[in-house]
Length: 60
Image (cartoon, rainbow, N blue to C red; front, side, top):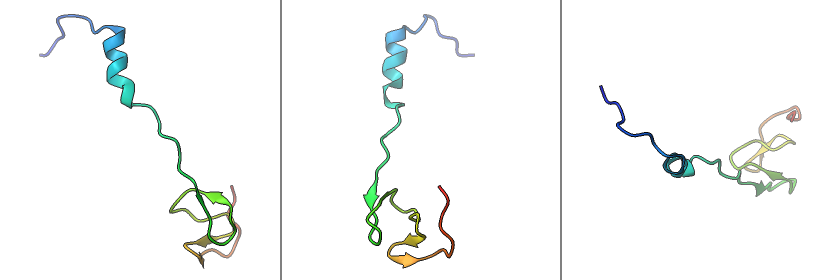
C-alpha cells in the first residue's frame, strides 16, 4: 500500500492546486436583442442562433 514517507508542505499542496481555480464565464452579444448572454445558450427572448426556438419567454 502506498503511504507517503513525509508530509506534503502547504506550499507544495497549494502549488499543485494552482490550476483548480474557476475560469471566468464568457459572454457574447445576442444577434437579435443585443443583450449579453452565454454562448450556445438560448437568449431570454427565446432566440438561438438568430432563430426563434421557444414560444414562451425563458425565465431567469
